[in-house]
Every structure is written in structure tokens, then in C-alpha cells.
Image (cartoon, rainbow over the protein chains, first blue to last red):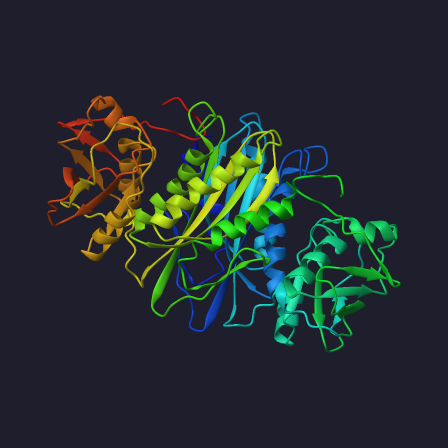
Length: 280
Length: 280
């Protein structure tokens, strides 16, 4: 298929899922156009999903790649407590992959898009010898209400939205993020690279340290998995209130920014580094 | 360098160039946050620049790759007549490239960003065996004023902002696009893949045909180059008025949508197809 025909097909598939009334122009022009509502902030994030790095054709069918590509970015919106609005999808694929693969990729992506009412508003297509996707997501929230990495305070409880350690087909915690933001939570992050590394980043931005006393381990996973394995896509948040629907795992402390203690002992900050896969 | 150190460096380099007061949070959180102004529309575009496809290390130093990666997306904002606001930069690079390469890439990108007052607000970093960039740009314009591919009308003059056919270091026509939009132009596109293919797309979206009578050829280029060679990054627009600072190349006609005639003869629609490099 030629590029113009592929774009036409994608446009037809996307048209069935135009959810955001504020997208006044999508695929087919030089840019997508968004008309912001009064008193809202918009949030933006972008994530690569690369063949051989984040998936292989052995482990992921085309629809799984589409799902994962969107899920990673949606998880960042969830961490801010934002409502999904639209996405731009950049896709490079080898000539050897069939038109069927492309169609299934968009089917997987659009199924997740439909679930969270996010509009596919544009993107870019290219040929390359491996599959590369880069998905940009935009979300909205009431002005000044975004949950931030930098808003944790000493004595806040630290919570996660689920058990950790089992790498799952990522299911972004979009509804949970919006509910937490509405209930007044100010500080959150998503666990994409591993509990310890993401909690470390969270504490660094807030200028605080953390004490863990209860790490909830998924069935079939080890404590090591729960601490260091990435792609949980649960949310981690800090709050002075208690949350019955989340699991309290520890407490924010004054102390050396970014330091994490468990059972009184400092634990090693290691986790997935996109540039050095081994730990320090 | 580890990823955290690289991100820290990029954050420092980007901090010097925070131009958009509406970016209230940039690098360092899960998402960038934008606070829209009253009565504006926001436009969004994303473009790949891929090693071996859009550049090679023989032809492009790191700073050129950074420049080109941003220029391609800025050109789409220009086509809409938008004022640049912020960008997200996704970069995958081989381990063999030095920290110097990364620094120079961002230096090239940020030099262009500074020229057009666009804030680097975030992105993604990954390792890969080739250099892949995907740059998302956001621009703003007064509500309902975006220039569109779909707004050309029969009898409009067709204009370009410069001579065609010489592939240049892309210099996006941002100021020209904003000036045209302010002067009331409704219909525009940027010439990134070649005059004929981009005019064809423009006419298709507007449901019109085009008649060319004067194609301005750059010194050292052929008419064939001017018609079919991409990466001119000039703007093409249609308007019932005349423009002294642009070159009139033809007239919009009723007739078969997308058809292009020159000297009364239909000319072949071919040009860069990202999926099939040869022409039809």
C-alpha cells in the first residue's frame, strides 16, 4: 500500500473514535488543532516503543505493540491525574511487515484509545528496518490541579494503586489518577521503570527521602521484582490522608533528597536506565 | 553518561531557552504542563528524522541533525500560521555516539528553538543502533484563524514564498506563515515532499484542481527539481488577493480534485512517498 492509502485507512479507523470535541481538526492537515476550554491546563508526554528494546515480534503481536505504545504515554497522563484528550502516533515500520500488521497495530491502539476516550489526531509514518513508535499524549485537568513529582511533603504516607513485581500487559491507571487528583492528592508518579528508581526520582524532585515498610509483592513475583522490575504501571502517590483503596507502603521523611530506606537500612537505587541497562 | 545525568544536562541547556510563559512545567515531571491563553487555538504536529533515511553521519553533523529535526516540525506550524510555543524531543541514539554528539545535537536544536522562541519542554531518550528523532511541536494562533489545506477556492492565485528545487538546510518559514495568516490568508501548506505532491494534497483537501503557469526554479536547479524535489520548506498558499512578497505560480480551478495542469497539460503526480521511494 502507498503512504496516501495507508493514511486514508488510518483516518477512517480513527474517525470512528473521535471523542474529544475540542479536537477541531485531526488527520489530513499539517497540524491537528485543539480548542482549549476555559480554566484548564493541558499536559503533554511522549514515549518511544522500539523493537528489540521494548518488545520483539515473538512476544508481541501487532495489536499488543499498538496497545503498549499508547499505554506507556497514557500512564504518564494518569500520573498527573489528567483526562486523556488526544494522541499523535509516529510509526516507522519495515517494508517486510504486511498491511495487515499495520492495520492490527492501529486496531490494538484504537481499542485502548476508545476505552479511555482519547482521539487519534495525527502522527507521522516512515519506513525503517525495525518497528519504532513514538506516541505523544495530551490530557486536560482543572487549572493548577496537576499531581506533580515535586509535591510530596515529610510525614505524607506513600501509597501504590496495586501490587508490584509482575510485568503485565500495561493497563494505565487513568481512572485511578483522575480520582486521586479529585480527592485532593498533590504528589504522584507512575511506576514505569521500577518502584525504587521511580520513588527515588519522585523524592529527588520533592527534596525529601522515603522510608518503606510494606512492599506489596504480586503473586509469583519476588521482593526483588517488586522493588526493581519495571513496567508495573501502577501509580505511586504521597498524601497526609489515608486511602482505603490504595496500599500504604511507607512514609515520606525529611533527610537526604532521594534516599530510600527499608527496615532502617538505606537501599540501593538501581533500576532500568535507558542508557545503561546494568545497575550502578 | 547515565540517563539521569544526560537529562540533567539537557534540562540545564533547555532552561536557558524557556520562552513560553505558558509552559508552567517542563523537563523533570511525567508531563509538561501548558496553561492556554483565552481565545487561542493550539496546533500540534510530529515528524521523524531517521538516520539513513533523512540524513547520514557523512552529510550531517550532530548540530545539523538537531536543527533539521526541529525545522521539519516548525515548518508544519508555519504552514498553519502558528506562533511556536513548545516542543517535545524524542531521541534514540547508538551507544557508540559520544556524549559530545548528544550535546551538539541539542545545541543545534536549541539554537533554532531560540531563534523562533520555542521552549524545549520534555521528550524521551532511548538507546538504539541508529539515530531516530521524533519532534512534536505545539503552536498557538487566534481562535479559528489557522490556515488550512482545505480552504483554497477556485480562482484563488497560488503563491510560494521562494524559489524551488534546491534542497537547503531547512529554514522554516515561521515569520512568513504568521504574517500571511495575519493578512487574511486562509489556505496554506508547506512544501516538504515536493511542489507537485504537496500541491496535489492541498487541492485534494480543498476539492479543487490547479493550473501552474510559472514555476520559480532556484539557481542551479532544474524545472524537474522544482516540481518534484522535496525539502524546500517554502510555504505554498492560495488567496484571491495579490502578494508582492510572494511568487505567483498559478491559479486554483474547479475541476477534478487534486489534478494539476501546466501549460494546459495534466502533469504527473509523483514525489516523495515515505513508503515507496520510487514514483508511480
